[in-house]
Length: 537
Ligand SMILES: [Zn+2]
Image (cartoon, rainbow, N blue to C red; front, side, top):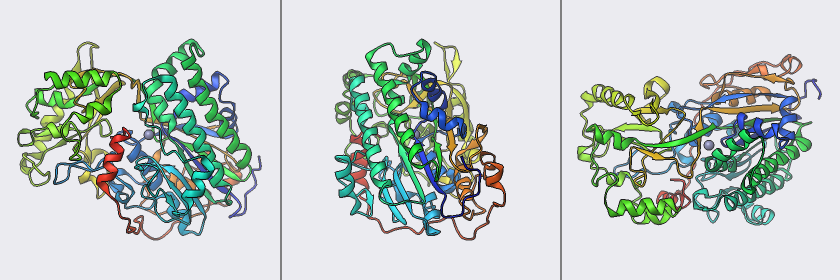
């Protein structure tokens, strides 16, 4: 590998995102000999953990990485906005991200960019190059590419571009893994087709099937680790998935490593789940929340639980009020006039206060906010799982302690970090305080991963304490592009060789992190309906 400084314009960048990518899991498959390319890439470059956002949720995490800004500045805290005046929680879309993202900085400098499947990029925005939108795109029949004309060729090249795999819809494990492998193969065809169009200066792509597989099969992966190999046809399919992924990494490495710095990142890691905790139930038991129907009682609850158990969650949802109104199912059942605090869904890991004047049917007087929040915090901290003899929450954060910036007032009032093994739910079908994990055996952890290889990357380095906002300034530095003072991350020069660093300096840029909003017309009701049917929300 050449340590010589490359003239600007010749060196190019690939930022490959693996949703939920986790070094512990990859090391397991490397140990089994199934990921030789990733192993070689990391041995010849650098690797380390990458700290996620609090909470480690896909939407805020990728947005933090791609803006270089704290969620308090970009305003994305979950898959939804806060409750609106109609008591709906509308899913976020790219028009909610008011800040420039990494491809905007490259575009502004005249660099050609290619952006593939990054979460929260629908509707796609104009860039100096191409964009194919990612997670939270409401189906493949909408305009999900920039320019629009790209869609036909992309569909032809891939045999129909697949945005995601609705993993909740699959009842059988092997069928789901086959679908995830098909999605990965489809994504690979898209990447090869798009990258072959021209030598882009900056390419970012995200593989989402890693996250879906690990949600569903974390338990099996752990078992493969314990046994030191596959023990069933299902396990063998899981191993094949990681081998396929490695094959894609090998292709990218062979094709681009001489001319490109390749950075591999994830938005969060993974950990096991044994229990889903219905925080609303706990709040109700302590008089903070009133439900319109009894938690867990009645024939409807019984039926829904049965349907849920056989995987017919979509049917179960249809039985519940609130679906058509765009409310989340659980929130349609809250008696707001008698509710001072309520929990969001798994995609929030948070509790909201119901404040008069701020929330549509608020009851907590603003003057009581601090006292009320302290009281709710105390109630949450007392949540204890007697059957396991342990507290459920590691930490309860007040929002102003973890976020900085003008959007902090949009954040949930309290953000929860569960102990390993627990995850929060607000599903009516998981109405007991403690519910079994069911088919979701893995959930997000704070520790994502980072690896890099290519010209100028110091070989054999192990880096510690990287966090998501560091990625954007580090990549701009590596390409001699200017950085803005308001970025929250730092340039991590430790990953580059001394020769690469020599003569390279941090260039302070002028200007704002805010992007010029496009006039995209977004049918939010349609997006919400579609995303629910895909099982996202
Ligand atoms: Zn994710």
